[in-house]
Length: 272
Image (cartoon, rainbow, N blue to C red):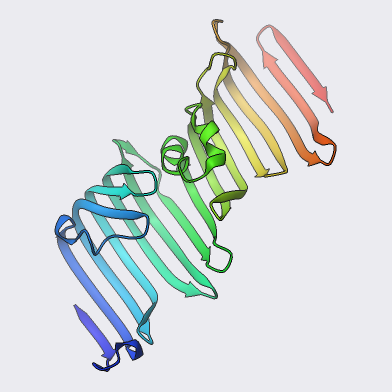
């Protein structure tokens, strides 16, 4: 531990300075209360930690860390769910902003439930006055995303029930008072399970721009499979389409820019 501090023992709220902490082979279990936040708590795991903090008037203004943990166990209190990470590595930087804070993490390497994620980058910005989170994630696997957020975001519950899978890239979304206000992302290998009255789909790729009252969907996929209930799967060599929708005072308006469906026995081409 290294520190360069100005301290007043009678008034710690005036403390200023910098602190550096480095710990190797840190076992988290004895320190559960220290690594506990409003929603997540780290209850087990072992690894290395390097931490830099800057304090002003007794408050943390900046923080940077380098994390390398194995067998990390975290508990999400909001949905009463335990998350197991076989490996978690990241460089993080946190600082205060006007009416909130911002967290940036890069060189993130995660092995979650025996599945290795692509190296990742995350940005989270929080505005306290509006209770708004802005989140950017470079790479996201859809299955764990649904398990971690469906309980917190009611609008995602119906989506999660379809057991979606696939990858999201350059995903941006905003939450205000736990309500999703916009989502922008690329998606690849997207699919969901067949249900009694609706078909399942596999291997969709495209871009989604969603807002509560309007949105845009562009699809550009090869070898997409459509599984109708009780029917043989249909494999499309190509599927290319673009749609927009908008809620109006008298109803919902859906516009199609174009649609191209390429099947070995059928070719459909249409414009809106």
